[in-house]
Length: 214
Image (cartoon, rainbow, N blue to C red; front, side):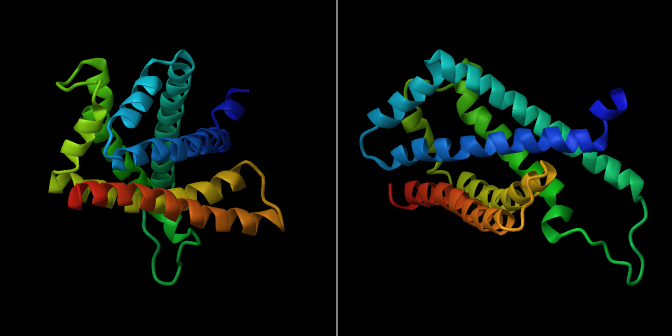
């Protein structure tokens, strides 16, 4: 039983479920962030306050953190297992069949993790009172951060890498869950392209607008 629960296949399955759950959160986060483009800070601050205080949101937040932790820890563990299984690089013409996106999945994932730590420090830790800042005015906090060129550079690079991560994650997640289908798999791949380009592009538009025009 333990072999089944803790096998590589089981870890990939759990990681896929956690990852697909996280994919549902990003559009919601993007919609809220678009409120930063308004001249009135009230809508964004109200949404931020609601997200921080509504009991159901707090439960979802806990689930999200759990899903993120599972996704990251299993992803890193599975990559380490792959490295240990193939300690010597392929020689000559024996090329790996692994796709480009899959080969760099761990690195794009770690870059996203780096951004998440930075993001939590600048926003979530303010809400917890661990770092200075006004949790009632995240609108001003965000606008001040996006005035810093270095923050925008990191933000934009991370979201380019997030797009690469999302495309492979979306496609491989459905494959891991056994949802491959002659008709629907191509549809999923098209949607993966739209999602992996649209979500990072949306965040990038917000970043560039606040940096260059506000």
